[in-house]
Length: 119
Image (cartoon, rainbow, N blue to C red; front, top):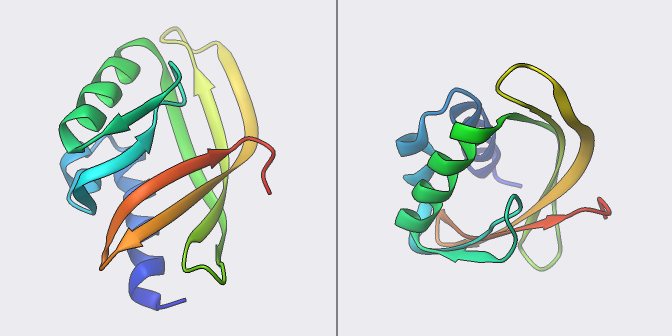
């Protein structure tokens, strides 16, 4: 895997965890296809992802730390993450590992999928 792509994905997670939404969205294509893992379904485009995260962050406090990044033969990158979700008052709602799978167009993320089974 190119160190540039590895560095970019790590930076995206760091920006997400500090709520720097513009830094994360800048690494996505304009028409990014993104999972709505919180409410269900899929989102299309940066504006939809911004709206989703704005709503999500008003209701829950989540952090996602990358553990392992693996480039797959098809060019996607799988990122095993440790996800912790808390209520606004600090109550633990979720603490587990999941797999995020990224597809790229050029240097930007074009799609992300969540593999709950972590495979």
